[in-house]
Length: 369
Image (cartoon, rainbow, N blue to C red; front, side, top):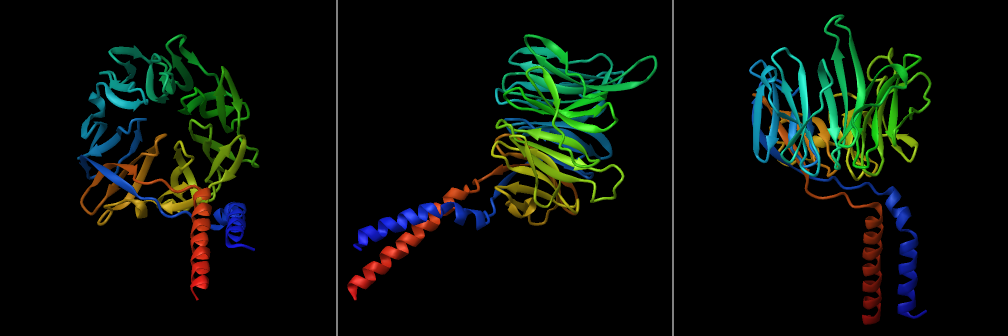
């Protein structure tokens, strides 16, 4: 056989075995840069999130005082929670913002800022609120309301859009429902109590709420996120089992679900299907990328001298809201991916190319002898 024919056969063999090579090769560790915001705290970050454009927001203790914080570019603002006025609570890729304020009576007020227009998202009597705004300006949120007379509380899920205003989403038959996430296609995932008293996950689309909880014995679930591709992350738990048995993280793609390697609790998912969460021990923040799980702290530049990296959320672009501590204080940071993890096909092509170079080199040496 002529050398060119042998080379062509080798190329065809390499292409045929690309998938096989990719399935057995672990992905290399990705690297994240960190952007620090001047908000040092002697207490741990209590809660936080990240907008579609990478702005951070959340709740922290500074010198023993409960504070709400929000970033804008490289600047960060923190105010006492009881005095918050138009503090960042979320945002979409178009630059629309969710803004939080606290009234003198302790009630919570939410607004959507779109350009110069402010729209109220208040449910009368609400004392807590959680939600997201998608690229088209739709806001999915859950609000807890306390009756001023009876002091009884109730929590329900809602959807706001400019055409219909605020619409209740209903429940799965139980007393309450809440919202976990909305993607840019308007698909919502959240949790609700069923008529049987179990917490199940739902998907809300085209005006219909449906139960998407996998049937896993007596397990209940906590939906945590959905990306624009429709991939969903959720956590399964058993109420009466001891830690770490009760919690396991799962990913659902096209209705099929599978466990996430070494992750007890998923916290969010980005546009590529990468999932951030907590390890089985409950002590480390981890990330699952292309089926491989990594300790997040090992992937971040500039972590020397720091510990307790805590993940708080991830956006569609893969930016991560986090905090970290040293021996003196804790700080809020954003992690930005510096390089993507190559897809499995890339490894197959690389291996095939390297092998081809070796083959051609050997033939040249044979002809020179």
